[in-house]
Amino acid sequence: MATAAGGGAREVRLAEVPNGLPEARHFTVAEGPVPRPGPGEVLVRNRHFVVFAALRTLMGGAVQDTPMPPLRAGDTLFGPAVAEVVAAPDGSALRPGTPVLHMLGWREYAVLPADQCVRLDQDGALPEPVQYLNQGATAYGALTRLGEVRAGDTVLVTGAAGAVGTLAGQIARQLGAGRVIGTTGSAEKAERLVAELGYDAAVLRGAGPGSFARRLAEAAPDGVDVLLDNVGGEQLTAAVDVARKGARFALVGALSGQLDADGDGGAAPAVIDSYRLILRGVSVRGYAGMEHLDVAPEWTARFGAWLRSGGIDFPHTRIAGIERAPQALEDLVRGRHFGTVVVDV
Image (cartoon, rainbow, N blue to C red; front, side, top):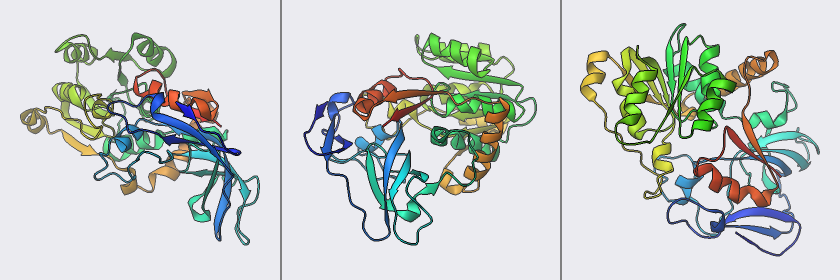
């Protein structure tokens, strides 16, 4: 990773499109003058932003049907960020110091239209500003709108140690699940899922052909009622084998493809036994947040209440300094982090 000389505002740019998984060397931390807002624009100072695996797909050029643009060499990375307003246009409800949520992370300062900032000082829904960077709305929406978790259900969460998965298991429990099973790639993470987040069992992937399916069957001897799938691939294949009658599958991620060093991050093939889906009446649906705009405010209200009551935790890893963000992304795609990864700018 290189650092360019310049003024007083730093940002992380893609220096080179990776051939495979991104590494810190593919990025540069460039410096320049603090940007100036134009008419109707707001200048903000970022305090925290999220590092997320989907950036790999955008770098690989596999952006068909995605709501986000591709990343080319020289582009500044982006993503959810919590910031403070530095300057706002006349007549705006925003004032210097107002905390806001927006999508131009990976930089110290950002200029954007005032209507693209979400104020965080009005509802006080969450105890701490950094908690607004959670990715639980995806899990909550999928489990309530598609999975429709019912009392006593057995819920399976693949990729349970990630930003979505670490909240999904807890959400399922709050919604009444009787047994919650997660999957992950390391024994240490498996232990944390059970010890810290209330998972009843954690199934390790890898370790030879067919072994994951066998271990999943052992962890769910009576089958599963709901699947929240962050992964795809062999884990989705195995989930079909343990589906109970009328099981509801909600697909929210494709990490098996996004984190495949030999692909472009845009596909996650899985072999599905369609005959078993028919016989067991299993529904399989993909979850897209843009199709469920009512979920975000509902989730934020419930998340805040659960945080304050101690019914749920926000597992996250804090990285200090924007200069460490490229390494944080490399570590994330290689499975070295637990929960949401947040960079403190």
